[in-house]
Image (tube, rainbow, N blue to C red; front, side, top):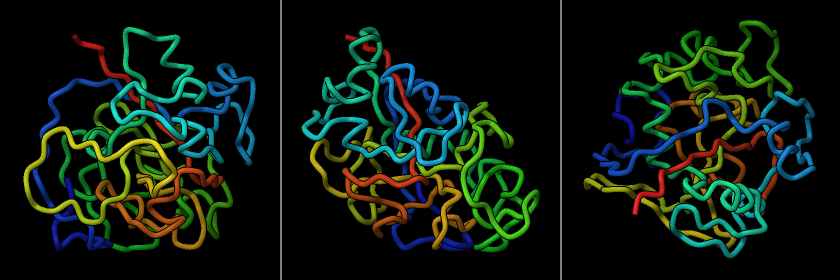
Length: 250
C-alpha cells in the first residue's frame, strides 16, 4: 500500500508498506447501483437519480449500522449490509477495508493508476480520462462534470473492476488513523461501529477539490472532512459504496 515520494499528487499519509491479505474475498465489479439498493430496501437515497448510476448520499451508518461489530459480516441487522448478510449466510457481507480496496483497485499494478500509468498533472490528466468520471475530465465534456454517470462507463482494470477511479468515492470499513507507517501489516482492519471519521477511497466527480485527478489515484487517502474521509453519519452525492463478500470459512 501507499505511494513513492516521486508520485505526482502524493499525500503525506501514503507511506509505502507491505500488506499481507490472508483471506480471499469477492468484490463488486461495479459500485452499488441505485436499482440494486432499491430492490433490497424499497428506497433510493441518491440525489442524482438513475437506476444504473451509483447509489450515493448514503452514510456509513446507514450502510453498516451505528453499533455494528468490528469483524467482517457484523453489520447491524437493520442496516443495508445487515439485511444483505441475513439473506446470504454462506458469505460475510461488508465494506472493504482500505487494504482490500487498494489491492482490488491496483489489480497487480504499482503506479498511480490501475492502467499502470502515472499522472502528469494534478487536476486533469489524459492517462486518467479513459478510466474515470472526475470533475476535470474534459475528454467528452468541456468545463467539468456536474454529476456521476452510469456504472461501467469507463475502462475496467485488469481484473474487470469498473470505476475504481472516480465516479463516486467509496466508503471503506476503516476508521481514519493518519499515516499507516512503514511496518509490514497483516489483514489490517481498523475500528468498527460508531460515528467516528471513516475512510473513503477512489476519488469522485465532486467539486471543490474532490474531483481532481490526484484524488483518484490508487493510493489516495486523506483525513479532511468531505475530502478523503468523513464522519460516519455524513451523506454526500459524491460518496457511494462497493461491496465485498468473504467466504465464511470455519
